[in-house]
Length: 294
Image 1 (tube, rainbow, N blue to C red):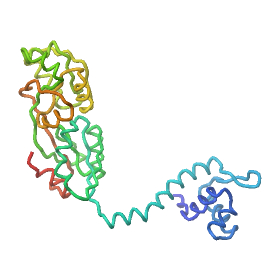
Image 2 (tube, one colour):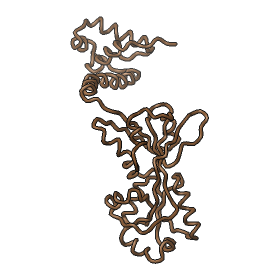
Image 3 (tube, helix red, strand yellow):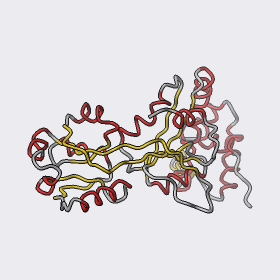
Image 4 (cartoon, helix red, strand yellow):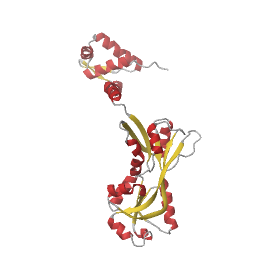
């Protein structure tokens, strides 16, 4: 195992590179030129590569030196931010909540599910959206406090996960005033003659929607399929087609997208789950999410 390099040596090299020479770096550091030069040589010895080379009367970075400089920039810029970060943390302690959001979950629903935590005055909310399997991996590594999803966690013998049901919502059809008016006669059979926007198959509700069409012998004219629910609603609000949405956020949907409700999607519901790694939730804000009435 190689001996780790000395960060003090790295700092002296960083100053030399920024100042453009050992003499100027020595003046800035208020040290002898020989001492600074020796520190840089020690760093080069520990890394196994020359970081500086003569150029005229000065020094320039080698390829290895450029790589080391880029890394040192990040290290010491972060170090310079440390005092302010610690001061701000002590003066206004934040309550951190890292949430994974399954990419099939509607954004308006996510906002409503998180509403109980948003009342925390010193909240620092971190939201990560992605595929459920990836989010569950981050949850197992404790990078996330909770994952919100439209389905419970799959059984995994290697990871002990608990799915807490948060509630469910019936679905309805929405669209622009023009499309709703055209489809209102003979609904829902009229959907066979209208452009329809649907979520892609990666969402749990898509299977239920397909079954709903099959039960009514409707072959929809699918004008678009979307992974992102907000994008689906945006195109629906633009008149591209009628679309299904959770009635749980009916008021917000009408306010945000200026669409109208066409009619119910009877029998189709969307379920919401909070997934954690412990049966007894310890994070106070996650407890709020689980205990809040929907």
